[in-house]
Image 1 (cartoon, rainbow over the protein chains, first blue to last red):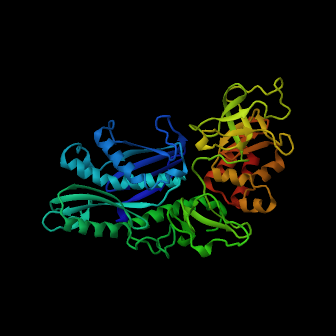
Image 2: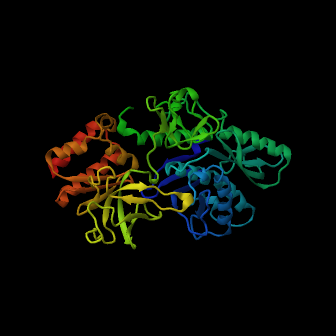
Amino acid sequence: MPSHQSAQVNTLPHPDGSATVSSNGYTVLCTVNGPLEAQRRDEQPLEAFIEVHIRPANGVGGPPERSLESTLLSFLHPIILTPALPRSLIQITLQILSVPPTAQTLRTGSAASVARIALLPSLAHAAQLALLAARIPMRTVACVASLAVVEGTGEVGVVGVGETGGGKVEAVHAVGYSRQGKCLLWEMSGRGDGRGMKAVEGEARRRCLVEGGKGEDVVMGGVEGRREDLMGWLEGTIGGWLKGQQRWKGES
Amino acid sequence: MAYSDVLLPGDEVPQEQLPSNPKKALSIGPGLRHIPPSTISATSVGALNVDWRRNAAWMDVNGGRYLPSTNDPIIVRVTGSSGEAFNCQITPYTSYAALPHLSFQDATKKTRPQLANGALVYARIATPAAHLLHIDPELTCIDPSTGKSEGLGPLKGGMLFKISLGMARRLLMTSKRAKEDAKIIILDRLGEKWGFEVAVGRNGYLWVDANDIQRTMAVGRAITEVDEQGLVVQEQEALAQKVLKQG
């Protein structure tokens, strides 16, 4: 799966933190600014106020973007250590840079909800990398996998990458796991039963954190011992970025 | 850098990696938090640093927005003046910091500096923001122990450059040992041939004045280049030679 994705940290010079992530055929640019002065009506006495804006690849945002924003906010809120920055504002802006050609016209109907699920991993990963770059205190880091269940066979594959073998899709899921193995996000669209959900859970967990959390012997930023799970990919991305930041030490 | 050196948010710091001086309380710096009773976990990404003598642990953190902390020298921009203080901006889009009119060396009600909007001041943070009391940070240009300015005050002329927070911290390391760790020689090399003044603000600003716009630009750009490209000592040496030759 990591071969389908790429990420870069601090792609823009002016925001406090930024990141670009491509996966499932979508490219998303996220910028984070904060802690800023919150407006009086948004200000919260004991924690930071988080604002999420999503801008579509073309046109202006509408109800689909507002709905994605609220999903993403409820995913990010437990991840960000909001009590560390009381009375302030953390502004997260996500611009969708490109969408796969098949998703161009999908603004309504069931195809739109598939597109929404397929977009969630890029949004979640870009937002977290930008938050890390902005040095916003966080409780954990989580990975999101988007999966499709094939009708009849109950086979589980990745959304939009053709791994489902062209079968008719029964349901799509976006499932997110924290580094500690806790489920922080589960969005689904379509029909599903308990058995299907169980299969999705196992597959999502495997794709997010194959080694159940920490990887010990992986060399950062190197090809050696490359892990195939999303958390390994995220760690590699962060490692590469940190290595660039530490270049002046001349240790490598 | 082996992976085990780097912590991600939520990772617990193993007890054996933390200094354990029985006589002093453990102090934890940026990037770490204490979860009672005895867990220390990371809140940011980076490598863990420990000082066994001072019984301290912190994380190497570069980037993000500057958060005011007491005694930090910073470069602020005056955005207005109220009854008895200038309103100053430490970072964009954050609440103002107050710089009292009388907190300059030898200032009285009649001799206080007249600062226009946009003027730059090199100041120190007297009290950081106290969020729960709704208090904004307060600045001063006087060293409380001597009553003198000690280099602080309005910055006239020169140019302002933006640098990373890590670079600002490195530039401000002045003790001999810390200077070796900071690995910055560009200022010394340029200073051997040219005369110029610099002021480094912990909030990520560098002010340079060489009384000559070309040299001011050359010095500022050399330092931003060292920062952005993470130049090592030898590369800084080569850059200094190049800059001196051109200017």
